Length: 201
Length: 201
Image 1 (cartoon, rainbow over the protein chains, first blue to last red):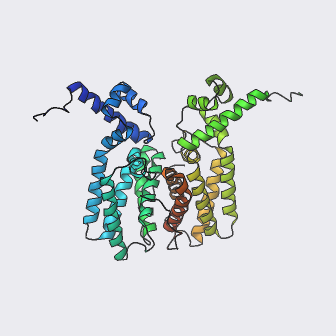
Image 2 (image 1 turned 90 degrees about the horizontal axis):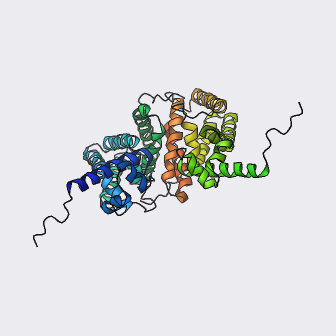
Image 3 (image 1 turned 180 degrees about the vertical axis):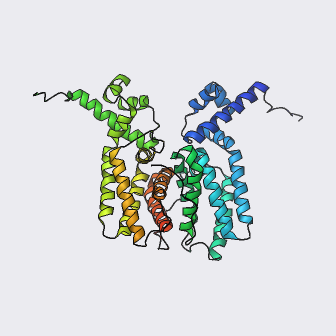
């Protein structure tokens, strides 16, 4: 009954675990969730057996790798919902999540890829979506958000933000800001746009 | 001077070439342009040497693989530009290219990835962009397009459309339609949106 150390890992095992998570985060951010487990093992310089001992399924690795991002995302949504002006709250959510997305390809994949129920962030994600739905309802009641807006429109915009990772890294932040402003323009009426993203073609 | 058959390939060589192009198109569409050449060779069931003999660089393979898409894209832009109502022309361009994009991940990558000048469709793409710039100028003069619109906004929306490939295949067409309508809403003022994309979350 005093089984206090059952899950403590030896120091080298802990090192392996950290290395795997770091490699997974980097590869997910670069290339999305499609990266094969063996490539994650290679980047982390651990054997496949070690990888699978720590993370028996890719899902368990994804969940663990995105814990921080989910927390950040949760904080963004919470702050937006706490704003007494629901439209301003929604604007900050759209801007901040779009910028987060443009920086991290894997996170949006993780968040949106549960469409086909393949990936599931479970309770945490469901609670974020409920908060967002409530924020949108209040913004609509305040007359700031178009009456035919649906929560899926926000999801569409978040998914689309993932495409911005095709922009060169130095243009990505500006592209995300302009894109978020365009999205909010679509969600409401006419407001001034920030300066265009400078993407030389 | 009657050197008529210099580039005719024997039948089996032609078969290899077709198989490589088919494999490249499928893999580009599924996963974008990052797919390694060796995977394309594997899918096409040809050796790397055969692949490189036909297509010495990845760029030459990309150019050839997307010839049809570029032609389709050209036809869409041409039809839009020929519309006597420039706003209606722009609407059809945004809708049709967004739907094309949602179906084919590789094409948007190819079209937009010359941002960092890594990939270049050359003259054809440049001419499409000039036509689009002219169409946007006319739509602006007609008072239909917002005065602070820039061509990069259209590129942003096309890039973002790439993100919609994260939606499940059966929801993709509806998602693309809704997204295109939202984009046009942002580009202009308030118009009615089509029914929401049905993406169950």
